[in-house]
Image 1 (tube, each protein chain N blue to C red):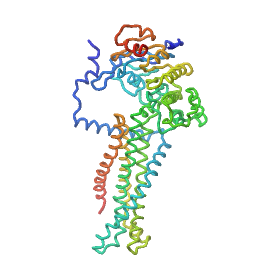
Image 2 (image 1 turned 180 degrees about the vertical axis):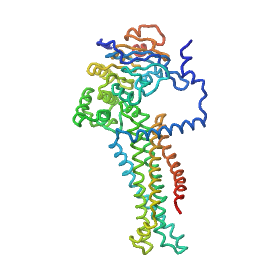
Image 3 (image 1 turned 30 degrees about the horizontal axis):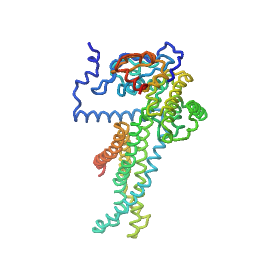
Image 4 (image 1 turned 135 degrees about the horizontal axis):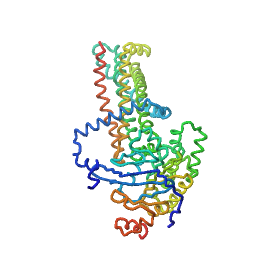
Amino acid sequence: MDKTAETPAHIRKEVKAPGKISRMFLSFYDVCQFVTRFFKEGFLPPYEGKELMRQCYDIGYRSLALISLTGFITGIVFTKQSRPSLAEFGATSWLPSLVGIALLRTLAPLLTSLIAAGKVGSSIGAELGSMRVTEQIDAMEVSATNPFKFLVTTRVLAATITIPILTFYTAMVGMLGALLNVSLFEDTSARAFFQMSLESITFLDITASTVKAILFGFTIGIVGCYQGYNSSKGTEGVGKAANSAVVIGMFLIFVEEIISVQFFSLFRT
Amino acid sequence: MEQKKTTSIDQEKVIEVKGLYKSFGSYDVLKGVDLDLYKGENLVVLGKSGTGKSVLIKILVGLLSPDEGEVKVLGQHVDQISYKELLALRLKVGFSFQNSALYDSMTVRQNLEFPLVRNQRRLTKGEVNQAVERVLDAVGLLQTINQMPSELSGGQRKRVGIARTLILQPEVMLYDEPTAGLDPITCLEINSLINEVQERFHTSSIVITHDLTCAKAVGNRVAMLLDGKFERQGTFDEVFNTSDERVKPFYDYNFIQ
């Protein structure tokens, strides 16, 4: 009897190719495995401290200019657009509180994460994708280095650490933008503005914002890494990985935002 | 064309492959491959593109898993050991990629340091520098130490790729198409380098190629992969002294054309 007739490969030929729904479940299983591997390997030695610091610098410092500009403009525009509505009720004095709450609860985490998904997510997806198709990841494997630990865990951890820091930075810059607008049109001092803003912010707001930012950062990192690490089909695959990292990352951020708003509203009276 | 000089080869097997099968979807690539690599020898694996030559050596280092069969490298079953054991085994097996696979965001020095500092964390900066310079000198590229991979020629990239594998002092070297895409002069230089590595670092090697000049110059033994199996094995002359229509075109194309 021909030996090939007994091989598993031969048997596999007889099995029907997985359908669309099966493929979806298989992909979901792959993603779960990827996330599980991150938690398994991310916190066990040897630690890639130097690479983690480099990634934090890349993700954080290099996004500062864009995030500063966006945060500042958002602060100005949001204040300007909110004033007429509050003025109708004679409540312009609530403007600092409104800006403070809006920025910290939603605008800062969402804006920072969406910018990072575009800038950081795509760059992680493209970088790892290009390393995959040029066999650089395989080269790490065969030189007895764990590429998952070096490339994936460091990037995901860096995004998870850096996005919350950037979120509070965006909120602060946004407040400065709002202060500029307020000081141009009203007689409110900077001290009074910040006092009113900060008084309206609760510990729950800070906690919710931090948790959301951590979640968004983790999502950006893991989606970018998953797409890049598993990319194929040459340069086309690299482009697809970068694109998917942004699209899927942004979609998941919005889904998480909706869920977290619902969740934290349970704690508000 | 220069024939490989005879070197002393042990009868100790460093790689043993028995009944290896590998398929991708419905495409059967390897259909029962049997292969032995003896200590100190250079074995050249020849075959047409797409016959599974690269797949074979990727299975040997655990980058791909076999569907069926036994794969023993330095006495360990590659597909049965843990990931940690596999990483330890890979320290002893150097793999030179077809396109060199240099880390393009790092300089030549950093490319060479990378595997060393990750696997021998106790080394001092001075010892690392010394090791990097030693292997770069061995491949004749010490002057490129601070250059980026994008600034190197194809031949230089191959040499740096080989140097990066040598830095871990492997017992076995796997070369995937070492002369592909290079001019004839550079091919000859790479062939001499492969022989030099064998003599100087006492490695056993598998060289994947379809370049018969390379095969004749570096191979102590040649194995021809045909239809997913090794149909012909022996010295270069033994393999090509045949009227087999699947083998003859190889020789004719390389030496008559």
